[in-house]
Image 1 (tube, rainbow, N blue to C red):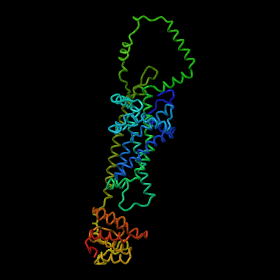
Image 2: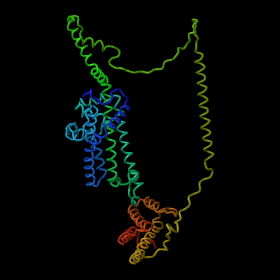
Image 3: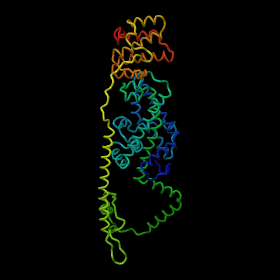
Image 4: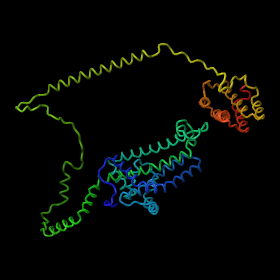
Length: 488
């Protein structure tokens, strides 16, 4: 790294200001950075998606892509680190030297090192400095003092950026795309509704997560590298070295003359005797004995702006102890008044709450009465034919698919209310009725009813009649769930 070619202003910064510097670096070199990063990331994401599709587990593809982040991080660091020191690498030059970013302890980073919560801050130690083993651990410990916590928070914030992006994409798809089929589960419903993990994530969710990683991960790497640069600037005085180099470049001729003159004077000066020369090691030992070594500690304490007594200029001093006594008495009186006011407020709140409580016991809940009709369909068992399967098949044979499906739907509602004891209300919608059936916990019945509701909605509202085979299959499922004649 040539400090003379550095393309950013090196100076001591706070940790969050360094993170902001990383954002500026991303904006400055966004084109070569995203080009190289995307050229490596997109094939990796496609391979992960193929693995998930073959295994029929999209969540496995998302987990695999998350685990392979250290691989693609190295490409971003390779580009931004060279750009900072005056060498902007194009896509061809980056891909032409893969050993520069792949041969930096990648297996260790993809094993236990994957759990490093300050990964972007520690990555330059292995990739740019080439540290290994104990040396790398000591180097990370030195650089992490007063900075490691900020690097961890950077990881947490970027992780939340990705999560918000994925959840926003899922919500946007729910708003813009046609309604999902009954029984389908989105990300939120799957995480908090008890659905199977395999049914929660889809290929669209994977693409949203891949897009989030593609946008956020270069920012994460640049911000971590900026923290690393700031820490080395504080420890090694890079800003001073760069400033001196630039001064030397501007004053090159004068500096050369001064150096020649100093060399000539030193050559003409008499050499000191060896006996009078002090021992450098002894001087170092004496310096280290000072009170400021081996530790430096910052302390803060309160100090009065003025002394306890005031000099009047006449040789006499005024004693202000009586002011202390007055202030102490005033503080004690105020404390008693505040506690008294708090007790009064609590007592008033309790009294008001007791006044607001009902004086009479609540009326018992009225017993449930089955509605005579639901969705315009009569639910009384005596209104249904005695041989329901035969009646449905007769209507079906006549080609009246909607009437056959409606008869089966009405018989199912009657069986649920009068046979299964499910409390459906006249004000319930079809979706609420389905939720009440699911709440009963009978999975097979809920699946059958969900398919029946879906077919009936398509026939009643969209005029999309089902096939006769579909109605026959629903009728067979009805016979399995409810005994023959349950609706009679």
